[in-house]
Image 1 (tube, rainbow, N blue to C red):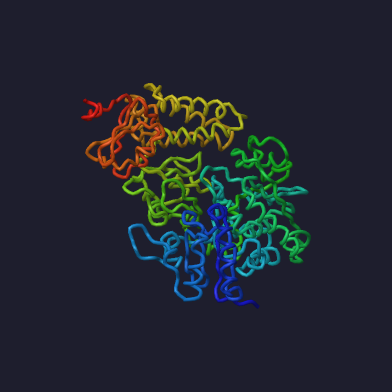
Image 2: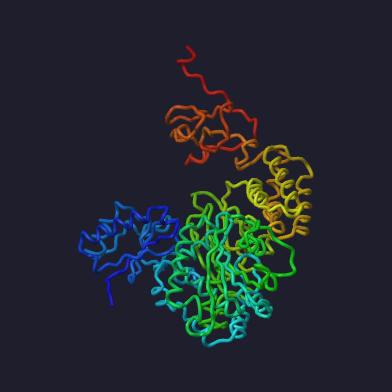
Length: 615
């Protein structure tokens, strides 16, 4: 058996690959060879480590030394210092903001310290293309237990007793869904996986499929045994080529090892899986639309009942679970329902994976127990707001159909029932953080624009209603809003929610309702004062330079694309309003807070006339 002094677990998830993992890998291979360390140090490409903000990242195992922001130029020094001289290379270690000391061990870094990994139990620890490495970490033990030692009823009871709720958005009890399908009588049943993940800013399912594809397949095998399915389909969006590649490799390896196909593990149970590439329609996240898409039809939801558990894909009983839900099945079967309930709350047990994005310092993928306060996720794990001297304003949860939660509610525990009370939804786990420079009217317009474009058009409330709301929001952001628009938006929202056919229309107004609920004064300022105080809505603002605060550094002058800023070095500058296009370049560039946002139409005072001009 091969033995190595150290394993270099280099992240090869999509985020790190985009940041240069492949180049770093080649540099490491070359340097290890050059230093005659190939027989002592093993380089392993893993899936997503989770700490996307610091990529490319690498864990030295078993020392658990964590390196971040690797570059090709740093590799020779890293290899020399760590593996020849025996001292970890501090330059590439994580440091908390405002703190100088480096943190060498991964689990001491706040981003990892407060997480509890169940879904992401193998993230960054195994080669996702290796079946052997998955098996070495208890992989397929749960499948073996379910197929050879449990009845369908026992499997379903374990999942029901665990309280596992679907992680795709609605939070429907997984065991109950399986029970409905198991009782349906048919010559053919289907076990389906939703890997479509259409929410902007969400990458939970993609990362699991890239880092641990076998966990999804194992969950499907167990689910198939529970409901009596013999065929499975993983529906993945075509924009996830790395996930598709690794899933396909995992499926082929399972077939070769007898973990998929006929008579799995000599249990008498047969089941196989194929991949279906989706075209990226957001509405195909709805289960009946997804099934129609697999059938080769246009992805449009159909009325329910009948529910898919009775009449789904090809009109046969079908169960659809998302990637995160399926990844929790194996450890739950292996350890039992009581073990699963040791984390989370009574009504929301277990853990939840979130994709932290937006104006947050530690962008990445995190997994926390249900019931964790929202504040802990954003500040302790996420590191707080990215920009210095900026304040937190809101966090949008639940994707484009979610709601915006203000700072006053940050102590709320993250559970299905508590998040709904705020006007947001848990959704699949997208969490977009916004700072004080965010215009909430423009934000609600952005999300509604997405859902209006993604509407399949089948039902009038969603097709027409979202467009009417979008037109009103556009008018408000362009200074054409009028009294009564806020109330009309609220009325329209309630009507669309009540009468839309599927979840897309039923949740599309959430961003509008939640921003009106918590940030109504911004809507009123846009309508009554024609002023966007954040400077986001270019029709409703003007930018000015404070003479008292301006240092004359000329950073804003160089950033301005219109040459609308004039001034000498080390002297106060000014903006020529006739040339300004309200692009915010000066505001975003200034480090001294000298750029101020005023209502539109405000003019700067004339620039002082120089002695040369006076002559």
